[in-house]
Image (cartoon, rainbow, N blue to C red; front, side, top):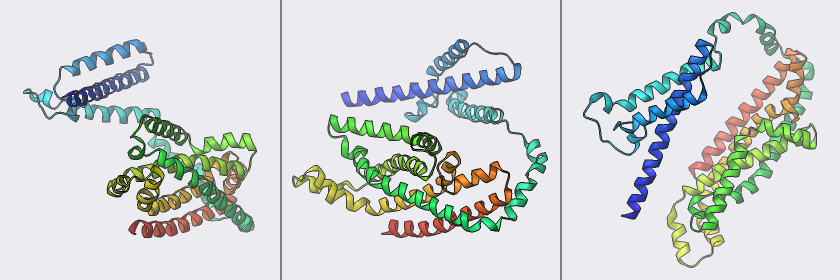
Length: 336
C-alpha cells in the first residue's frame, strides 16, 4: 500500500512538472513573439504569472500532456478530452515559428546570394595538386591523432562504465552515490563540445596535435562511458544472479558474468568512436588542434579555395574509406 502511494506521488510530481513546464514554455514563446512583432518588452514577471495561471487552469482539466502519461480517463466534454492534442499542436506551431525567427531563416537570401560562392565551388572542383602529398601527411597525422585519443580513452571509459551502470551500482548507498557522481560528470563533459576542449587544451599545452588529442580523448571518455554503461545495463541478469549465488565477489561477477556479454558491443562502440574522432579531429584543428583541420583553416583564411578543395577531397576520401571499413567490422562484431 505504501509502495503504491509512493508511486502515485511520483506520478503526480512528474505530471505537475511536465504541465507547468509546458505552460511556462507556451507563455515565454508567446511573449517572445509579442516582443518581436510589437518591438516592446513584456515584464518577465507578467509572463511568469500568465504561465502559472495557464497551469492552474490545466489542473482542473482531466486530459493534459502530463495526465495523459498515467491515465486514460477522458472528460465527458469532447473539447476537454482532446486538450492535450491541442496543446501539442500549439507547442509544435509555436516552436516552428520561434525557431524560424531566431535562426533568421531567409529563403530569398538563399536563392539570391549564390554569386559569392562561385570561387569556392570552382576551387573545390579544381584542387591544388602541388600540396597533395603535404596534405596527405597532415591527414595521416590527423588519423593518428584520433587513434591515440581513442586508445587512451578506452581503458578509462571501460573502468568507469561499470561504476556508471545502474544495475551494478544501485545495491548500496555508496554505489548509488558513485553512480550519480560519475554519470553527472560524464554528462557535463559530454555536453561541452570537443572544439571547446580544444581551445582549453591549446592554451594549456600549446597549439598542435597534442592539444587536439587531449580534447578528443576527454570527450571520448565521457561519450564511451555513456555507451558502455548503457550496454552493461542491458545485459542478461541470469548469469549475474547465478554467479552471485555461488558467493563470488563483485569483481568476479564483473569478470565472469558481465564482461563476456559486453566485449563485442564494446569493440563495436570503440571502432565507431574512432570513426567519429577522425571527423571531429578536422574541426578541432580549426582552433589549434593541429592536423589537417589547422591546414584547412589556414587555407580558408587566405581564401586559397584550390587548396581548400584538395583538403576537402582528401578528408572526404579518408572518411568514406573508414566509414566503409568500420561499418563492416561493427556488423561482424555485433552479429557474433
